[in-house]
Length: 250
Image (tube, rainbow, N blue to C red; front, side):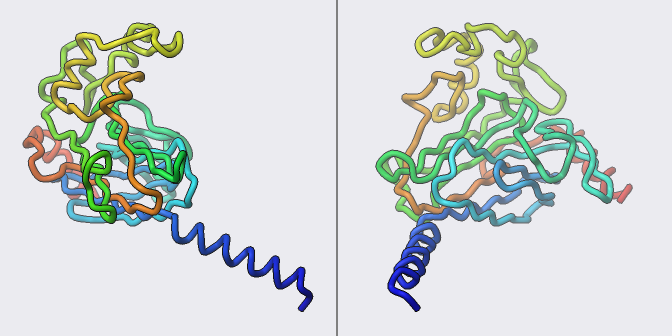
């Protein structure tokens, strides 16, 4: 074996070791009393009945990524179908982002300073209570568990109500006041964004809600996303009844 081949092989192995070391594992768990069809970009999708977990390995350097839950879905044997909330291109295996309203766990791995950036975002509205937390880096300071467990669906303003969830005002009104489409500094908190912020203080409530909503952990941290973490409000009986009816049909 030539010196060049040896060098290239060693470099490749070293690179693979770095990627393996810094890749993150996401533990996605459903604690809801109904089925959630978990979705991830990148990652695809998975049906999670109550108590089930999906482990997702994400490469180092991944950015603009998100995990969310879909509710009241109906898929055929080939994985084609629709969901009431969080639907993504009509498939069990998501190829893009979900349709609002949906609670989002957003992240970017190994960014500036080899830090992971992560948040819970309500910029696309809310459908399921969520926890997004590090599992391997101590969990303190800006590397901590994030929770959004308020009864937002039950308390949602009439203007934002949607089947199965609560829309963000940008989805409804589509103006710069709520969407910040005119760039940095062109918008601020509103009555509707405060509704979300008062109930989930560490979550994004509008697109430029950065200072109190973005968190960081060291690169190589692993994470957990829980739908309906302990302490979440009770869910409307009709959601549980729909789940029971689905089980009878299947």
